[in-house]
Length: 322
Ligand SMILES: NC(=O)c1ccc[n+]([C@@H]2O[C@H](COP(=O)([O-])OP(=O)(O)OC[C@H]3O[C@@H](n4cnc5c(N)ncnc54)[C@H](OP(=O)(O)O)[C@@H]3O)[C@@H](O)[C@H]2O)c1
Image (cartoon, rainbow, N blue to C red; front, side):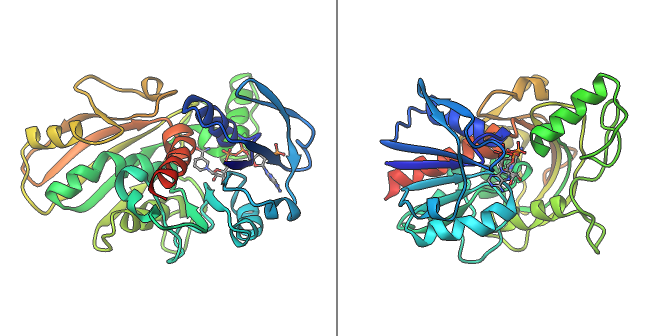
């Protein structure tokens, strides 16, 4: 297998490299790309040192089996189609292609079947907040049919990449400069992630609306998100309220969660610090007043579950099915 990571020096890219190591993926050939700024710097993979290369159009024609992209939407839009045309499977972490009808948007535990026979082209990795929410709700949706979801997110600063973490750390040391988040994030919460759209929602919120429908293959689910940035380094949390079409019991919901792949149902309190560094979605604080509506608290590491782990799981599932 020939493999490349694009955006290899970023938060997600570095984690992709670690997860490839952890899952014992050992390609015969591997290249690491970033912008001209990081070209020439060194990365270690499986005990060997590699020089980071500058991303070029020519490099995309080298015939990789898999390219894992995490360098932002503009880079994906320019370079991913070149690699796909050259016959590579591109697993893209940006939002560039997620809603394209012809491009599968995959959480392998839920709709990995879409990868069977998909030999050439781009596979989109969903938004981090969407991945952890749909993983926590998928089995419940299968059994009880989810009609609507109201969700408030508590998203860590690493969701905005290395720059987001630097900003919180600088403010913790006394800086008052607000660059990435518009307002000070240290000792604060900011109820707006992404760009405000004409309908009053942000683009981050609309990702949760549209991607959930696409992944669940159910255009009728209504999703009502509020996305909020919090001064946490790793792991997003979500307060989820869901309404089902069929009646449930709380024991039935707990059983569904216990039977969900990559999910742990906990009766203990689970905080972002507990989720950080794991490949698990933790669902806790499950409760209800009646038998068609419930609340829960969902925590997962946004860089792992919400990006790098899902991307590597797509790669492994694609290899298994083809
Ligand atoms: N952070 C998350 O929780 C998360 C979750 C899901 C998806 N994503 C998505 O993953 C992508 C990367 O996010 P991140 O958090 O890893 O950001 P990041 O820490 O800022 O890293 C960005 C990476 O992209 C590279 N890059 C930037 N411009 C480039 C160019 N013109 N050509 C080649 N490489 C370029 C950077 O290389 P240099 O070192 O050379 O600058 C770096 O390796 C984004 O699309 C983001 O939306 C992030």
